[in-house]
Length: 176
Image (cartoon, rainbow, N blue to C red; front, side, top):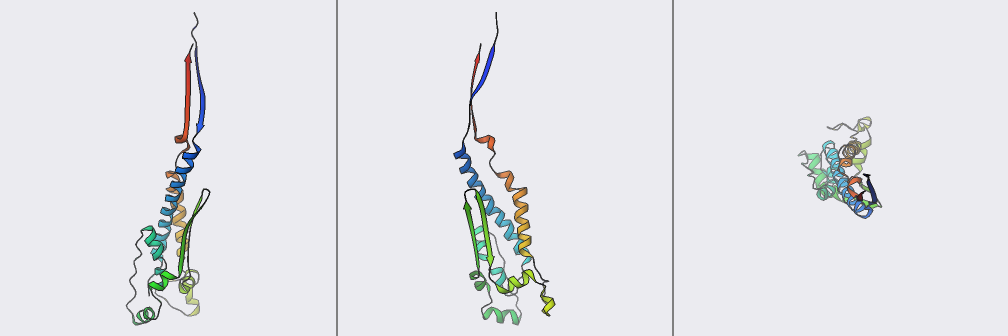
């Protein structure tokens, strides 16, 4: 008498549609959470005098639900500049941010057109005889980039859907 066993995998299918949809949802969410990490790192570095520089971060902060505290300096000079247009509202108007997607590439962009933010971000203004309470250059965008990168590598990648979940096995086994 013979005893036999045979087992086969008759079908292995990858559910690409469901995977692509779930990956898109996850990448959108993780890009926004990475942008939150960027913004929080930037806010820690950008000081407040009139609130204009930090004000340029406010619209993205509202969108991402990140608090951007602004308490302008009470000095005569700060209050004069605020009254003459260098204020939070002006900063909010001098910025742009966007979140975009092309196929499976997700990105966010932020830029500010606040002149003194740009000058203080990249330059040591003391070389021109300007003495500020907070040393320059700020390098806030570099800190934000680093925070985004760390979030993406250490957190976001672990939250993306795993391929194994989208493989559909159909097994047919038969005993001799």
